[in-house]
Length: 411
Image (tube, rainbow, N blue to C red):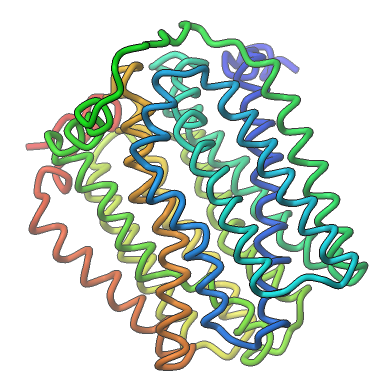
């Protein structure tokens, strides 16, 4: 009890409401990912269609990047998030209805996942921009790490829970997901920001839409960090092919798929908890590059493994190394960005990072359909390491950055 009373973050009710809302939503989305992936593979028996699920979510996020960033800076962020939750919930309940009636098809899944991608596109930038308005600058690194910890906790529990419930019927899982989305919206109502967002009503033009891109282009450290993560996730998208590994390589079924999907999150949870307790204070640039190299090596091990414990361990290491980059990047971006620009900068960041997950899934599915599942993941791991080596040459400022909080460069 004394620890709770002494923790400024745990005394902040708005921060607690925000991370609960995000965690519930993340939990629901992880369940959705498992069910949609397994259902699509059961319908098509094709890794290519698993990739198309990622592409369906990538397209709206990519096409709407500039628009959603502008919306996040010029409209109420809480309201924008809640409306996006409503759209997401409607899509989930449609999936539940179609599954219950036996009308679900690969086409309907792709169309609905496209609209879920639209909801996520409008949800991401205001969600990221809200955290700095809820906690102080000094507490932001710990808040980001704590938020990442809870996100990974949701990723751990969500897939396994979804895989377990799948035996009861896909429509039941969709109904539960829809209820969780509604609950997430309710918690958003209890958030109060420390500094009121200034709603601007200036003229919408191309210059105002492109301000986020211009801001990042002038800061090599931020550009290098988000582009590094983009290509690392793009090439290392092994998780998109987990249904194939679970079904035809490791032979462990939907419950085993949930275990595989949770393994990276277990590693990420432990690492993010460590970072929340002991924030990185020096040589963060070098540590980030080392972490991404480890990410690539873990991807290679998982690609060639036919042993379940080894595969789970590789995914565990993959998740632990990935969260290092997430915490460093989010802290660098949010602390160094003015509040009236956070929406547009976050939207560009999500275009690089958020959409890279879906685009990576498409790339993995396409490559697997052409070369095979194992070669696809193997090439991705090798490509990740090559990108790291290239980025160390292109962005020496990022390699030498010392402190996340101040963006200082070590001698």
